[in-house]
Image (cartoon, rainbow, N blue to C red):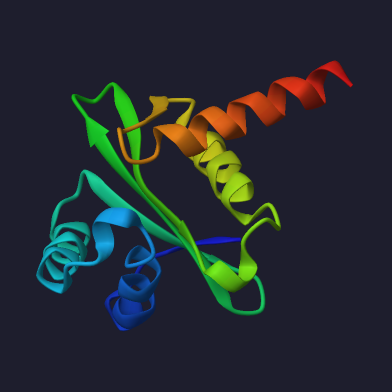
Length: 123
């Protein structure tokens, strides 16, 4: 289930975001977390079942698009459908008001997600 990021989850969120290719720079990670905490157009969610295993970040652009700009799953929990579940939940949350799309960092995952959805619809 997706839960909204709170300040007391900062270390967990930074750890998850550090798994993204551009997440290796600690200063940049701290700036990203600060942006999620202060910018009302940026929303960060964590995926929690028993433990927190994923993070997904959305930026609202021009009151039109909900852009998924971060998506990360703990490496020991990958290939279990968590990323797909997070994208599905974001679609449910935002698709009534915004066009949900990806940025250049999450586009490959979105393509994979959309391809798997198309093949499931044909089955």
